[in-house]
Length: 343
Picture 1: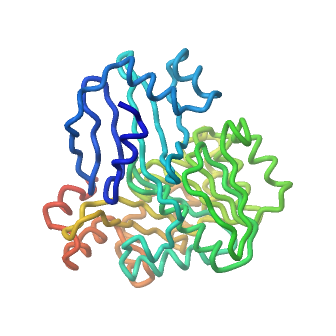
Picture 2: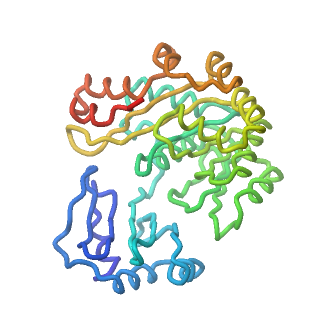
């Protein structure tokens, strides 16, 4: 069995391919997992399959050091994100299909109200926009679409610094430079420092894992740039907590000040199976209005009531988003209840 044969079977609606030793290849279609009728995968065969598509710079790290690796695979004009790792000494992997074209926000099945809020966020010229969500929630696509909104509508110098390039931007009104860890730079903090001399207007960053990277991203936002960052938290409030609590307590007051002064907004996303097929996003939206900024400056993350009471200006909690999708007939009540946040 060849990996390319499996990739060719990833037709419309199939988002992911899971490869696990002892199981046949597993596809995720419309949010649901389904085993194929192929033979179960053997460890040696799977390792060989993965090494065959990994770039040389990652092969030793994966095979010899048993480290997780993230890269892109291109086959037959289609791009896939490959995440390969180890489980109890055996290889495993997930490949996600990436659309060949960056979708516009209007193509993501976002309801009219939240869509307008996201478009206003993208119209900002400085500050910090946080895109949050659990793994598989579509935050990479959402962030790329926010940046594409800028690319398509105004002249800016855009830089993207990510661990793996999923989407390839085509210059439109803006000019986009895309940099990938391992190929174009070897250290996020140094790349962010170098970026200060590259005349950026807009900066899109992948998940920031080090305190220094978060600090440099906040400094970029504070010095007049529009910065997009990813945070792997399921709620908007938890995303902000994650940024602040990454720092020692002695430094948090300064981080809170930076967030207070520069936050444009936070969008936390879930993807849910839609009643008519496919998947639909549910968005929690928090905007950097004075009431929110005042609490952030004090390190007060009790923001839920502000979000709930600010629907008139476009904010909404995840519960409100889910209930709206039920009311519109987009998802079932059972699905909404299963995804409701627990406090």
